[in-house]
Each structure stands twice: as C-alpha cells, then as structure tokens.
Length: 289
Length: 289
Image (cartoon, rainbow over the protein chains, first blue to last red):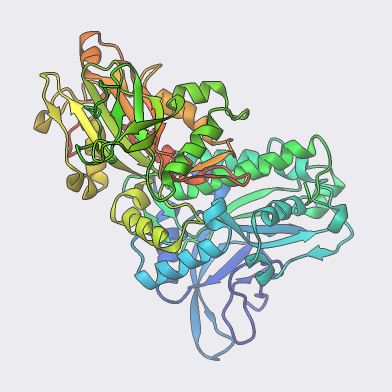
C-alpha cells in the first residue's frame, strides 16, 4: 500500500492533500476514490454495485465505456492516524499513458436529479445557468493538454467556469493541437477525434446505447476523454484514445424513460467534435473562426 | 371572411370565444392565429418570417414538418366592433380530416429560453417540474381521440396537468386505440405509429435534422400529431398521419449549437412510441402493463 499516491494528471474533482481526502492510484492500474460525504459516496457505490452485474447492460458497453469496479477498500487517512476511510476501487483510466491529454466534460443541460432536495436543485441550477451547461448541454470541467515539446496546458478552475460557447469550441480544438496559443493547429484532430477507434466513433456508439437504455439517468456524470500525446505524435496513430463515463454520485433509476438529458448533451458534444473533424480536413482553424 | 370560425378540433392553446381572441379557420385550408401579447406574437411572426425563407432549412423539412406561412392579416375583433387584430396566417393542419385524432406534445425538459426574464424562467421551471417535462423530456398538452363509433375522448386540461409517466404511456396507447376504457386495443398502432409513412418514421426523419441543425432552439414548441380515424379504420391505411411542429413564440437563435433540449425530448418520445409499436406486434397491451 505504500505506493499509493495522488494521481498526477487529475483534471477535475476533489484532490488529495496531506490533510485532505482525495483519490489515489497505486501505479499498477488501480484508482481509489474516497467515498464522498452526504450520501454521495454511498450512492456512487450503490450504482457501481448494481451496474457492474446488471444483466441488461451490454458487456461491451460496460467494458468499453465504464471503469471496471473492484469493490471497496478501507485505507488509512493521513490526516487522522489510526483512522481509515472507505474507498471505491476502480480501474485507473490513465494507466499506461506516458504523456496524457485529458478532459473531463460534464454532460447534460441539467445536473440535478429531478427529485433532489430543493437547496441542492437551486445550487445546481444556478451553476448550470452560469456555465455552458444549459446553453450547450455540457460543460468542460477540466482539461490538460500535453504539447509535443513536453509542455502542459492546463487552465485553472476559475478560467474554466467563465468559459462561454466559443471558449468551449476553442478548448475542444486546443485538446487536439500539438502546439498552443495562436499557432494552435488541431494537428491531432483526425487521429484523436476521427477515424475508426476515435472519439467520435466511440461517442456515437455510446449514443446508440443512450437512445434505448432505460436503466439509469446519469445526472452530473462526466465523459473523460484521454489519449497519449507521445503515442499520437510518434506513431501517427490515435494514441490509445479512451472514452469513459465517470462520477456517478447522482445517478438515479430511470422509471422506464431514456436519459434524454444526457443524450441531448451527448449529441451536442458529438456535433461540436464532428465540426472540428470536418473543418480540419479542410484548413487549419483558429479560435477566431 | 364570414366563414371564419374557431377550429372544431383544437386540443391546446387559447380558444376563441365571443369576447376572446383565439385561432380561427376558414374551412378552405387556412388557420388564423392571433398575435399573442407580451411580444410573443411578434416573436412568433419573426420566426415564421425568417424560417420560411431561410436558405439553410432543407425544403423537405420545411414542407413536411412545419405549417406553411401565408403572411399576416388584420381581422376584426368580435369583442370591440371597429377594431382589428393582426393574425398569422398558416395552413390549417387538420384540414381534410373527417374524424381527426389529435395530440399536442410539448417537447423539451426545459421550456424556458436560457436568456428569458427571471419571473418567466421561474414560472416555466415550476411547470416543467410539476408536469412530466423534466422527467420525460416532453408533456402531453392536449389530446383528442375519435373512437370507431364516432365517440370522442378528450381529457380536460386539469386531468392532463396531473398526468404522470405511466399516464403518458397510457395516453399514447389510447391515441392509437379504436376503443377506450378497459378495452383499449392499440388497434391502430401499426398503421399510425408504425410503417413507412407512420409517426415513428417521420419523427426519426425529424430527429436526423435536429442532430445537425444549429439554426434555432425551439423552446416550448409542440409536435402536433394527427390522423383521420375514419380513414385509418376504413382503408386500413395510416389515415394520413401528420407530424407537425407548432407554437414558436419562444424560439431563439442557436449560437451554433444544436437544440439538445428539443432533441433529447424528441428521442424520449420516439422511444415511447417505438415501445408501443413493439408491444402491440406481440400482444394487446393495457394501461396496467
């Protein structure tokens, strides 16, 4: 257990610190997420427990788009020696990526479960309206891009919060650029977003499932995109593009209805990414276009 | 002009009365919608004016899914002799249906344009949460079903307002039944919902457009379904199934983003209707199933 450490490339969510709980990784492929307060941890655990064995979930969807669930583990808390805290054990989604480019995109115009308590609804609604969620059907909660030269671009949270629609478009271009700033080139768009195993193809497969699944509504869940900037530049391949759903503290059962809120946001994200792929096959775009 | 009268089969919206403005039809194929108060009429007129000539709207989409716009006309108001009121002139969508079955389905979990004034947002949000809009992505605003025997089923507005998810499913079954009550048979499901020119095929064509169109966001618009109960029973055909969008007082420009709110609700409606078609090809369902 001594190898446990905070993940190096986390882009959103709570972070571990000497006296603060946060996720840990073991470097061997596992990710330890501390159970959150206010029943959220219990709810997320209940989701993973139900989802991981649900007979109506296609195995391909579960394996391809969700982190594998490995149960729970009590880990000692650094802040209070002698005490321990339960963690959900999952696959480390960034394992094996030497130079990861990662973005966390919270999906859905509405991030509050319809039957949530009123103060929580009000808080979420205010944030959905203050960010791009209501307008776009999604918001970028975190992003980290590895440039070819080894530099990393990573806007802080306050910068992300103030992002408008053109800003989101720009970030999704920046995410597949090998250089930043005015020279932003979208050089990796075809490899990462396009092609057979690319983000777009994977998102469309996910969409086909959301058009029919009436098991869960994924309020406030995110799509985590990642690829290896080293691999995409060196080999010209997709750099092991990964598309995963994360953050299930507000998932609810669906009452026989599709998750139209998640699906709408997902379709909006697909259109944004499809536009970037189409543009970059013509000419190099910039944030001004 | 003496032939103008309130439409016989209107299922939702304001109704004309001796001292109240409401839509009129001329019996020859035209529908006259009085400009609504509070800028809504002006906004709806602006939408029709822009939409009817917009070069980026595919002619097939415009012709198939929208009432044709014939400009405006000043009509005398019955309440105040000597005064007149501007009306938007449109195709009468129920023209030619001898025994129309009609339903008005308001699409979208969210019926308020994001930049609407605060009191309006609060009012719409409360209604979206009190009805099935937030849960389902749509709500049934009106329904009228012609039984084979000539009887008409038409729940009133208070009944519609209190409808829950199973109630909506039941209404969408009732809409394609030739008899009501416990004997509800979904006898018209294959003809009206299924098949080549059926509701489902038309909704899927509409969906394909909403997956790419970034012109307008249709807040608070409805899909009006209609068919001729006489034709569907007599000939065994689809009874001239019509799928039209109506009510554009809250349409806004889209800022380059798809209408994820409308699209999500549309996909939810498609899933409900597809389920009914699938069920009825197996066995006769009831409201209990």
